[in-house]
Length: 201
Image (cartoon, rainbow, N blue to C red; front, side):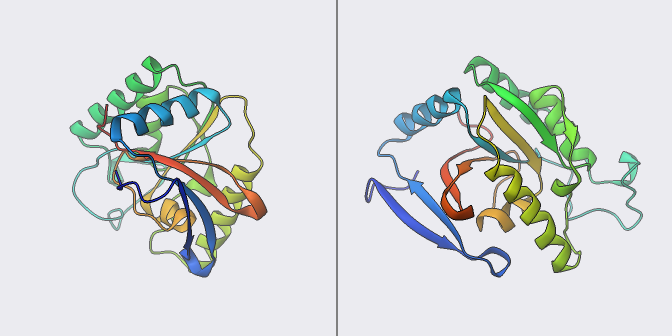
C-alpha cells in the first residue's frame, strides 16, 4: 500500500487522450485498508473492474484467433483457474453482494467470470481492442464508462475484461486477476475506491 500522505488526494490521468479525475482514498495501514475495502463492497453501489486471471504465456492472441473457438485463443493456465476460484471463494466468504457479472467474450475472461462468480453475461464493449484502431477502443471505453455512470446498485456490478480496456478507463496497469474498485463520480469521472490484488487475504 502507498504510505499515508493525506486523507485524500486528487489524481489526473490521461488514458486515450482524455483526462479522467480519480479520487484516491489513501489508508494508513494495509490490513485496515483491506477491511475498509471489503466493508465498502458489502454496502453495494460499486463497480469491480477485473482483469482476467493468469493465462498461458504470451501477448494478445495467436494469428488464427477465432472468437468462437477457445482452442485458437490464449487461455487461462492451471494456476489462473485456481486463482479465479480463490478470488471467488474470498468474495463469497466476505458476503459481497453481486448484482450482475459482465464479461468480454474472450474465453479467458468468460472462464474467469464463471470460476469466480458463477453466472456471466457476455458484453461486447468489454472485448479486447489490443492492436485495433484507436477509434474502436475509444467507442468501447465510452460505452463502458457510461454503463458505470448509470450504475447505483443494489449490490455491486462486476466487469471482467482485459488490461488494455482497464488502462483506457483508469490509466493504471492491472495484474492478471487484479480488481479495481470504482464507483460513479462527478461529471463523468470515475471515483477510485481501491484495488484488490489477486492473492491478498
